Image 1: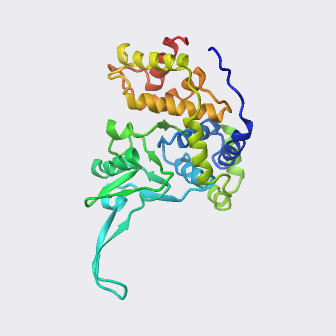
Image 2 (image 1 turned 90 degrees about the vertical axis):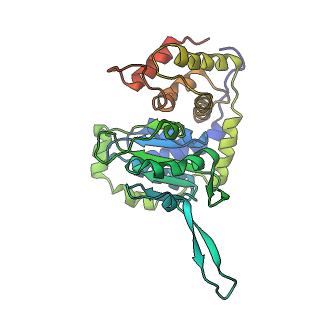
Image 3 (image 1 turned 30 degrees about the vertical axis):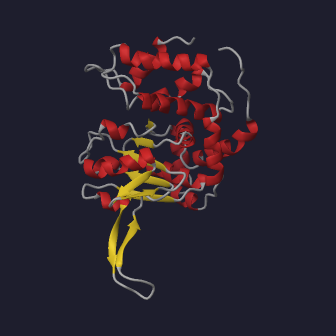
Length: 319
């Protein structure tokens, strides 16, 4: 693509590389997934991790919070979970020494900087929907009052595959609130050997220091918004988006919100690569985690959603 040429930004990238390295020291053999999780955080998105139990989904969320220095809470989603268990509730308190009686709001676990919604699809749709406003508006409306959530605010949800017993599939509106969906998969042989021979992951995690803090994270997030996107790059992105709507391969094309999410993720990936502008390879690098949970095939096919996204990328030339 034409000028301006991308410029390296090693000074800005150094703490992000250190953060990625620290997380990868706990979640072994998943360097790309760790970078995607960081990119999602930098883009002010929310992350959905879908995989079998026991592959490190919860560990990744907890490690990310520890390394970035964020306040962390975990909500265990179960079939009997109620929206009030997530958002909070007002409780009547009688008159005491310091004042009169009245209802006092007790914030729920949603009021945290990084919220782990563990096994989110084991809760009913009513409880799942309690996260919708929080994830989109970064606020919650309770009993006629709107309450702002902490800044930054980041939801990491884990999800078991739909074929497992006791799951409630997330509706499209809920899925669309997640900037990315990633899978971890089983570790390779070398990583698994290191796990078997090493210390217990949670023991290491407890002594893990923060690499960056919330204030620095806010600075990085502002930097992401300033990453340059050329007209040619936007032409390429719009051509891809239009193809999702007209190719006939997908039931429905990407929405404008999904387009904005894709661009934000590409900007964050460019920053992690140490560049001050977005290149087509940045758009391509985040395509599957951003699009695969948003694009359903137009008809029944043995081809996976990930394969359909790859076909989309190959079908649209770079300007």
